[in-house]
Image (cartoon, rainbow, N blue to C red; front, side, top):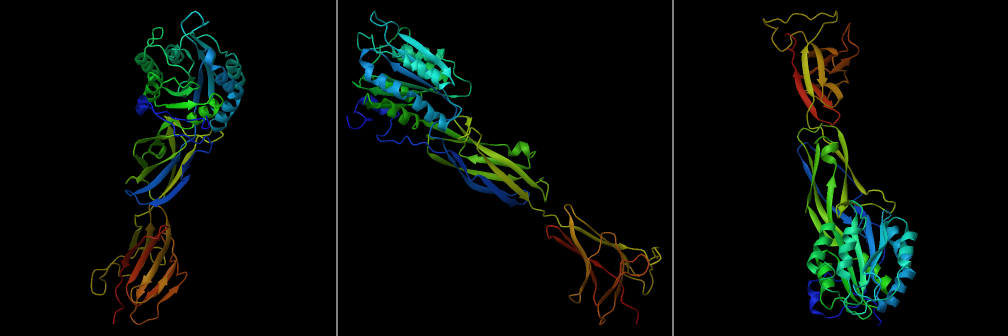
Length: 454
């Protein structure tokens, strides 16, 4: 055959998860885009952005078990996998450093077969041990065509030491259909056992290409979210294995620590909640970032998002979790406080305010204390003339000044003033106290004094 991966027109293929011929086995980096987000928002505001997850070519933290039909007709296929198994495992390890493997084989329940099922090497992080287990495969036995794959799949699902939280995959290849029942396993019970264990099955029909004659392989691949591939040349089984591993469906979702790490000041939501795609492809989510009304104005909050693939955090080539770092600046929208209160005279005493003719006004004596404060910080305190562009300052919070209003006079600022006064200010119009905070919010109040007597 020229094409090592070929689909045959069989009615039972309709329900199966299929690999398109010529699918890539290229390994590339998984990522979260954008890698960082920075925004300035007001309390109560929200901000939407698109987040793209580039999924890994192989699902994360995989436990991959190679299950071979090792009956007499499988010699060439077995030889191909033996020769290339270490390469396959190293390629997987390059994409997913936290990967482990195992090896098992099956024959049949009949006199020419020394066993029906055997676990050659349990799940292990040591590639050499798994290669040694595969090296123990030998084609033989299986006198009649139906073999004991249902028994083998059931036994492997329950008998291997699958890691908690791993992506569990059985790569199963053979060239003959299976008994049903096989031992005590039926197609229905086998599917249930695989689903209960959370295992995806990649089923490869090789050589004589009769693995799916009774539609067992397509049914199992479809029910477990796996892949069925037919028409596999016995000298290209490892190529097909890599193609299958890089074309599995994966479920992608997003998670964020913003709500917990910022005590609810920043929260995030993602739409949709999850998506299913083929491993190695990209999916997009809409993220809404919300700043609570109670977030501290003028503060900067940091938090991070991460993607989950099959419920497992997305990692980079070193095995480190991939994060998108979020930096949210909360605007200061509260204006500063500005007050003019009756202040001390040069001798340090507060003169009594009069009530008669010529003594009217907010402060008949013109002695003021200038007060400015803010929830974040005060940038400047100045006194300006309402009748001109003249401004006097800057002043410190609590400074004492003398203000005189004299129409037509040249505005002036004598510093320091006598005694405790920071300044003596002469203005044409009314005095305007302007307090500006560090976010450039401005509050202006009048500091009224009576005009000089005529």
